[in-house]
Length: 513
Ligand code: XMP
Image 1 (spheres, rainbow, N blue to C red):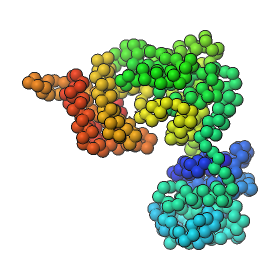
Image 2 (tube, helix red, strand yellow):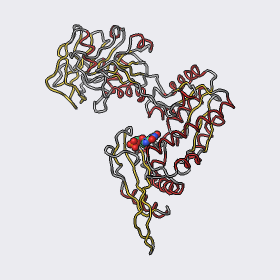
Image 3 (cartoon, rainbow, N blue to C red):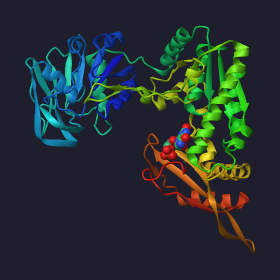
Image 4 (cartoon, rainbow, N blue to C red):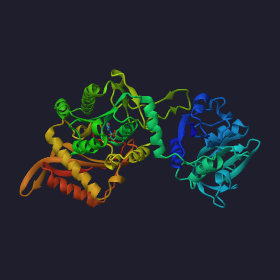
């Protein structure tokens, strides 16, 4: 295990990704983690990340006493470089010339970090305003760049290395080789972390936490909740109840598909609750999007709690609630300017854990999204549950603008299904982060045969995104839009006009409500 001390760099998560991709388990810890907590992880090496501060400023972040005395191989990146070298008497100062972007690196020692670089001078990604001015005693330079004569250095015992550039970003040529050399050549680690070993270790941990207790889990049919439940099924078969609630706001045939797919996978531990009428009756006439969300959230908790009570009658008291919280949600983001550590947590089922006194089980807390998909594959979760676009909890209620009713739901479902069918037929589904149809609350004039019509409008939305926080609209080949539009207008009764949404986020959001 490698511990990555986070000094606030925007790239810290990338370091973790690269390390895990190379087959070594790692965790990100705040830069000021206590010595005891750090050593409890039994790290075999430390990586000190970059960060926005300058090491020579007053109040610059430093590791806790004792951390740098650990007899472990250490790699300092950018700000982390400053931490390691100043601790041993080296000097970092403002370079007087901020350096951002690519810079050619001249490797002078093709060993250790640069083993195998013989004669290769990669372009590396710089992002700094400080540079290493002088090395501590017993250290030597191993690479230079135009603005940083000491662009990389090592302690002569080979236990400490520093680099001014960012080996973790894709723009750094051979950056993965630098990190691999650190892990395998310098630290002598093995690349034995795999998803199979994660699944085995996590199953054991779940068993320890849960004992013979009864665990409940809300299944949406999406990736995170499905893989969470699958891990529990592997760890404590028979002690799990997963509840899939049909809120009447799902896509065309979705309830049946999820029921079929996950009902088969989870067998007797799968519970299906059709609460469509309860949700749709409560939503009748409600126009305000936030009010819709509140109503849907409130009923979901009630329905889920009822299902939990039913399950208790069969399998004994429910003690645990499993949730699909992912790593990006739990990384402790430490403000490098202050002592406060904040931990974000997902509470998809609102106040339920407190109300029913449930302890949380969050087996995906250590995984990134694509690792969750990989875990799902290892667990044999049906591929259709792993590769789906995200779908919002309030479902089609936020895609029918204005009040929701059953007739409009039918129209929207048909239009949405055609759009997705055409996207799949064009082989574009996996290139798109999320795609869907929206039913607008207006009518426009059209002509069908010899008749004038006054019908509904469907808007199509498809976006590319990394995380849903920012997004751009997807550039379709025109024939995919043409075919979707023609089919929707022809096959969906009551729709005569189709528009494509070309707004990015910001200023628009992904959903229309
Ligand atoms: P927005 O519309 O906020 O969407 O740009 C970003 C992502 O979040 C999803 N979304 C929701 N998911 N409950 C959810 O579970 C919600 O109320 C909700 N609103 C938006 C949206 O589908 C997109 O993926």
